[in-house]
Image 1 (tube, one colour):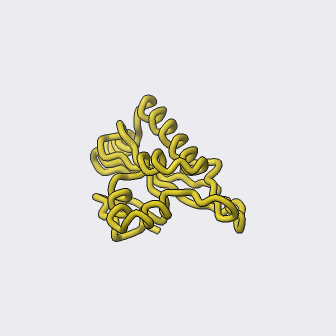
Image 2 (cartoon, rainbow, N blue to C red):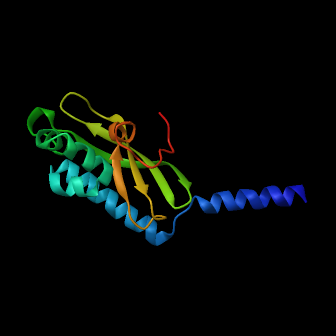
Image 3 (spheres, rainbow, N blue to C red):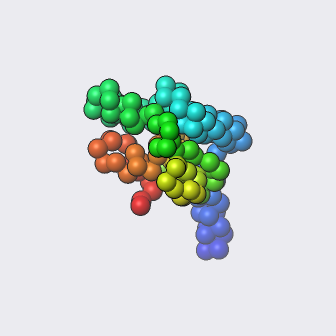
Length: 149
């Protein structure tokens, strides 16, 4: 009986951390749009795909902070995200977080691993994104942070 109970608990835990194929497809499309908007310096789309609390935080700091944060500077300071790789997923109820590693490349650095976080508060139907800097910024009042540094 103990083995069956352990097996049942394991199945429930595994199933509780999955999303449907439709939700997975939606997430992948949104992640691609987020990375493309960042790399193409499409500030409005990039901000639109970023978690609303991040946008609210940088808006409260003023126009120059918002523009600096959400624009991918041109010239030698331009930064691009490439090759997203799924790393981990955690959930609590309808709150789901996924961690991805991307190659962050700029004039100064090549192939630096950098993390992006996808967050859904409605069970995987809608996704917003945070960079690792924003995810761990304690001044941004996320409801939860399931990953630690």
